[in-house]
Length: 117
Image 1 (cartoon, helix red, strand yellow):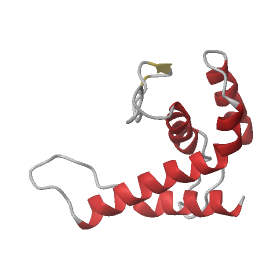
Image 2 (tube, one colour):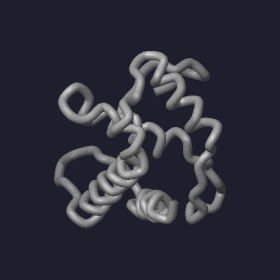
Image 3 (tube, helix red, strand yellow):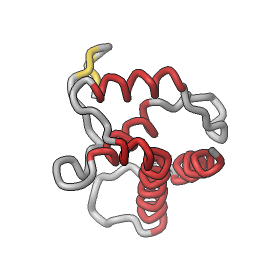
Image 4 (cartoon, helix red, strand yellow):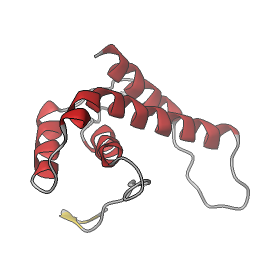
């Protein structure tokens, strides 16, 4: 969350403090490190952003060897979770809630990209 150009809060950390911390880092990378194009079908990541985010994270908590080994799987899991969540919301919207239905195809493409790496 931003107020102008100032970062004022971080959201999307669904499992912070009660699940693998690596998952939350993968969620942020999948969202914050994508290059946003006019063509939503084009999915690309900015490797410099990824490197900077992971580096900044590690100034507070170093990734274990095991976490480094499963990093690609964590990125896929995070993409899968958001794809399925958005797919569910699109096809089974909740009544009476003011929710924004987001396009599940975005994270389907992110998942597909991570599977090819």
